[in-house]
Image (cartoon, rainbow, N blue to C red):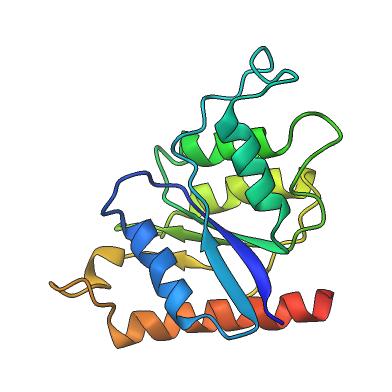
Amino acid sequence: MSKKIAVLVGSLRKDSYNLKVAKVFEKIAPSSLSLHIIQIGDLPLYNEDIDTQTPPPSYTRFRQEVADCQGVIFITPEYNRGLPAAIKNAIDVGSRPYGKSVWSKKPAAVISVSPGGIGGFGANHQLRQSLVFLDMPTLQQPEAYFGGVSSAFDANGKITAKSQEFLSAIINAYATWIEKLS
């Protein structure tokens, strides 16, 4: 039976490279993983005042979707040398209410995606800091900084062979690692 893996995409743009990478992962993931992109763009900014007995429906939906998964893959761009607000907000929504975090013990992988040469290094490491606090064991190797992503897809949106090989190494390492943790 395959493990259900949540995929969170930090760029909300409909044609984002991050979403394209998530869709490639869905296609190339080994059969031991079943990847599901979970929407985060409809989550109101986390505010304890609205997270009451009747939280916003999007909070409830998001928390349940993540809770139903056995692992999480974060695919994030880098904005101003850090995480985009959408990913940070999703982390905050999923970690509340206190003591009911949906993240704890879920194996994670972080892939930062950028047209720039350093591949979102800052966002990647900033996200990893939060995952330590959230008690999410995180894949250490191979490190996944996907720089120069604008040349990774052809005019028709198809990924190049070299880029697919890079992404295959990451998703296969994650699948092997998550199996060892089981």
